[in-house]
Image 1 (cartoon, rainbow, N blue to C red):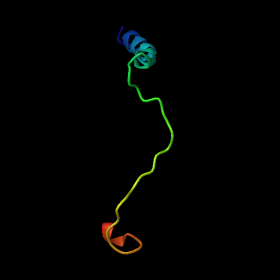
Image 2 (cartoon, rainbow, N blue to C red):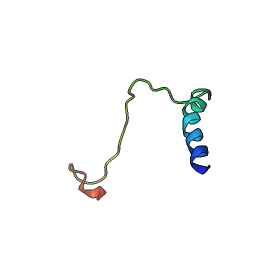
Image 3 (tube, helix red, strand yellow):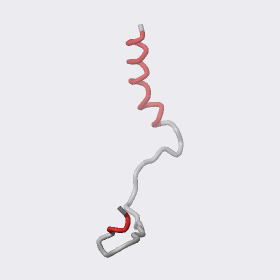
Length: 46
């Protein structure tokens, strides 16, 4: 019985997330920034 319930849950979970407004749909790459402390090889961050 538990396997049946787990199977039903797994089958219905993708359809449930597709209906939730605001679900991540992907998009273009955006610029990112990082700050490194230490030498030019970032050895100070280790």
